[in-house]
Amino acid sequence: MSDGAPIDLESGELLDDPEILFKIVAGPGTGKTHWLALHVRNVCRRSSRLGASSRVLCITYTNVAARQLSERLADVQSRVECSTIHSFLYKHVVSPHLHLLEDERGEPLVPAYERVERHEEHVPRYSVVKDWHDQLAEPRRAKTLDQRIAILAGPTKQFTAARMAVMRFLASVRWEREGSAWVGHSYAGRPKGLLGDRQALAEYKQRYWVLGIIDHDDLLRLAWDLLHKFPGLRRALVARFPFIFVDEFQDTTPLQTEILKSLAEEGAVVGVVGDPAQAIYGFAGAKVSDFTNWAPEGMATFRITGNRRSGTRIVSLLNHARGGGLRQESAAGHAEEESRLELWVGTPGNSAEVFGTRRGGADSRTVLVVARTNVDVARLQGEAASDANDVWAGYTAADESRCGFMRHVIAAIRSLEEGRPADAVRELLDGIPSRARDPITPTGDRKRLSRGERRRLVVTILRSARQWRATEGDGTIRALYQCIQMAVRSLDVGVRLTELMQGKGPCDFAEGHRFSQLATTVRRDTDENTVRTIHRAKGDEADAVLVYLEPGDDAKKVSRIRHILDPQDCSGDEERRVTYVALSRAKRHLYLCCDELTTQDEVAARGLGIHVVRL
Image (cartoon, rainbow, N blue to C red; front, side):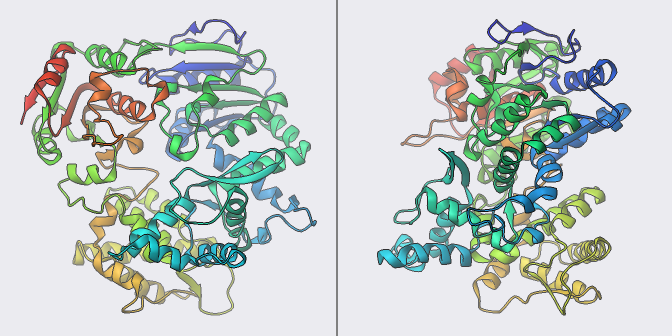
């Protein structure tokens, strides 16, 4: 069935066979989440494969999307589990069975498996990196890591930038299969002279397992190991979840695809939904070919072409920018005489200011401003952008032990100030593990914090941070940390925050940066900020959207306006797909802005029905 042409489907149309394996190609605004919810209900109502203890599994890309889909399915909640693939695999595979994995000597593969209590973003620790690199260097009589960084820093002594380059490279290391062995591969550029082949990069990642730390990518590798070494786990998982539906499948990594394929081969009914033109996570290891090549035996392919989000003018521009493949039709029903499609020529800050007064009558709750980088987000917010893109990387390089904790603190403060206390508590709880870890250290023999003690810490920290914001406003990170430190000291839970030593790198960074500089670009599950990067805005929509099209350079970077004026098939160019995703967020009014525009490009833009305004 997978060899035929795609079958057209409406977003409200049910499949005749609820147990069929399917792939759905659905462009932006098609209502695919609406369709998926309908399909899940149909399966729950009609399928004979769902028993009293089995459930439908819905995999989404983000925790926010999982919560939203779960809310849509409240009427069948007892028969459905909505989750990210990482959360699902940790809960059902890795957490209960990690102790079963052994290395070639019969020792635990993760030596400190008893200390593993979550999976997290990989943040390289300089002490671990130095130890690993220098052990590689010693037998070769090569330069140590400190010597290598000094060379990278150059005559201008850019030590922080050099250290950040090393950390960025190692933060991007992912697991890959090479024959029957696991190796490491980084998707970032390797700093000149840094040691470590693919096998050495694998050994680097395993150094954190001794500390009881596994990152998101480790989780996938460990889940793969468990499911392949213990087939009974696969069978049990499929018996518990006979239906597995995956949204945003175009952003799936090869490891995730292999895991899903193994479950399909075990008998799970796997259905996937995605759009190759919206695949924008190649930098994280995702491969759009995993979606286009997905074709298990017996699968049927469908497509949804109606766009329920955007008006006719915007959909016409989307079809033009897509450059080929799926062609959409607007089913939104917007009055076209009231919609606006404009290109503003001026600085980002000026465009954002004008957007605040125009935007087609849309109120502040239905607007969105998007840009490619954090630097441009800062410019659109009228803030200094000199280091906006690297401020968190700089924090990691200067103070790796506190950076992760303070990221959770600052994200929680942002949520609290936006009137979402539940999100604030959830965010900060994630930053306080039950086993104390720098900068949270035990004051006695305590090894674990109870959930009640963690919640007391969260409430105390949030209360003190809110008071600090009320009195200090945009104070320094050092002042915020010291405020929290004093609040934690007042609690009797057996932990404290480590001291910031005067004259050291961590103290210098915390003293030299204010709350707003980090709060602007802090990553959060839920982001109510109306100015975001394109990647953070994916999955959102707004009545009025402003898209900043940054200029190119003299090397390989093409001006983003070219993605619209000179369309090509975006399936082979991720940056073109990023632009396509940005344009597709708009429902009624789409405003584009760029720094400059030639007369020839202005004529081309007008030919596409875009009204050009020079600010």
